[in-house]
Amino acid sequence: AIDLTAGQTYELKVSADNFETTTAEQIMPTKPILKDAEYRQAKNKLHVTISDDSGRDFYVLGISPNGTSNDVGGYLYSETGIAEDSGLDYRRVIFGDDTFSEQDVALTLEASVNGAGSGTDSVRVYLYNVTEDYYRLDRGVNAADNADENPFAEPVILHRNFDKGFGVFALGNKASVVIPVE
Image (cartoon, rainbow, N blue to C red; front, side, top):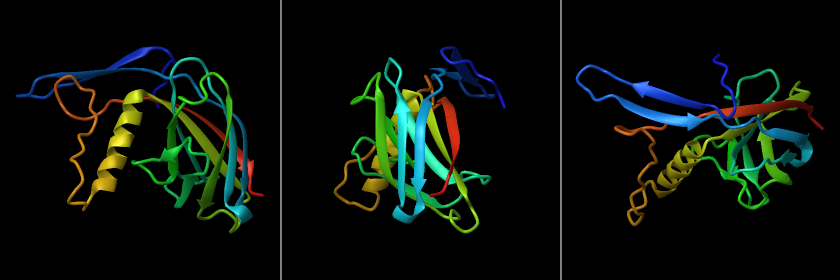
């Protein structure tokens, strides 16, 4: 793993024979603050409280059985209207701090974690503070997925941040907590 410092600028430079060199820059986001989390399996509810710092922030929130990879099945669905389904991973939700900047916000999500309850007594809740470029790519992928097989949908142009090329260089800072399954 590479240790990156919040607030520092990082550049990714890609070069190959017979191609122009392309670069993208990102500033490492601050570590998010996950103040409280509670998972009630019987009601399929995840309650979390996060504390937002100053500046514009974008978050990805997810859940998985403790001790497993994030590849375990399940889903999250926002009931508060703040968070949206991720276009990159349906087991996560993504949101910006447009409606709650610099304050605590409580989110209630419909949550189901495959594997939780069958011998699993705890889950891991994770919160990423991601760069705006990640957020914009996710929203584009979600729009493209929703337009798939719709002959009347407008084409979706996916976000990119390389100066001479395609793709996104993005960064995220993660906080996580292990909580009991109730």
